[in-house]
Length: 250
Image (cartoon, rainbow, N blue to C red; front, side, top):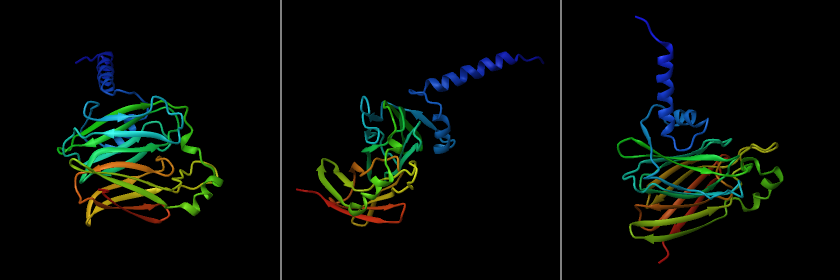
């Protein structure tokens, strides 16, 4: 039986083009990052149910505000965020538990890059939302050893604010921390790597973080549980632990 290699090559190219057409923002690293993150899990691109808001242009690449709303995905279990072209692409991995799939924070970017938000639904299907961050870049290696030393007296200082919502509570907190990437000569990685949110000893969310998050992290999220009194426990890469207590302000 004869075969035409050009025929199979054409089929392969058409198949590859069809897969890529589903990706709303092309980047050369996306496929590898997705394989590393999800392995062979089923996924779908979904910019309808996931809204990712970024600035029109990130003037400050060391502090790029991001807001995510994936609340249309019912019973979301987990959220992963990465930036395709960052030197440190991984940003956070959240077990939502009793946390809504709504989140705001700021990140560093090394250059213009797509940012991806992956949300797992109750059936194990991953939904992928995308947005493109336009920036001159350089935010991932902006700090210096001298700058890091300035953080020592204030390390761990924090403030928080909790507001009652119609169904749950909105929590905003910030903590003084260099979130050092270690990419600048003479510096070592030093960042908050783990966060847990509790209410009355109930674990509402667990997060793994990286140094791609901006200095002095500020985060906003919404709970689906708890009684209005919360604790936020954080740990950094030097095993320092920080404890934040916050409660609703009536």
